Image (cartoon, rainbow, N blue to C red; front, side):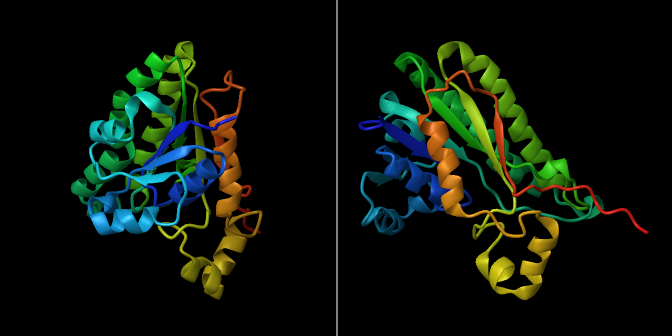
Length: 249
């Protein structure tokens, strides 16, 4: 049972944030939600309106987010790390774009864990779910900025899992690609538009985008499973992507 338990979700309106909030609230958690847009009071109120056991947090810095979420009561943390994928040739790249991407996808989750782990240790355990990406499994020309940041996030997962295993704090990840969300695969471009839809059908063996409800199932499983011996695992949510390119001829 998860009744009376508390979870924290970062970037709650982006990427895997909406399914994470819905999955955890549906499983009986009180869900504390961070988002960059929640610095605005009206946006916080609109997000929380009509949602049971969902709190929108004002804090933006990792330590303050954890404190406002009620650090001592946290059982599950979903580090939903997202930032627009900035693509382009290396000789035209802006180093500042790399720095901002690393800050969002590597520094932010690192700082969040630094703040929350002492409280999980004091409680005798807890679960950490990282939302990462498998995109570097098939690097594309011009993708060096998001590829490098996402691989660094996956490295954090492996390091955190080993370090925290003795404290009954499993750390696992879900790595989506070709998942229906407005940040990376917006509906208008990849579902409504025939060209975008054909691109997805060509690239993904499942011939469609992954759906939020499917991702909810994975998040709920990692948040509630009693199989706490499982740690350092990345569940790829990709519909069979990537596949080997078809040889010419």
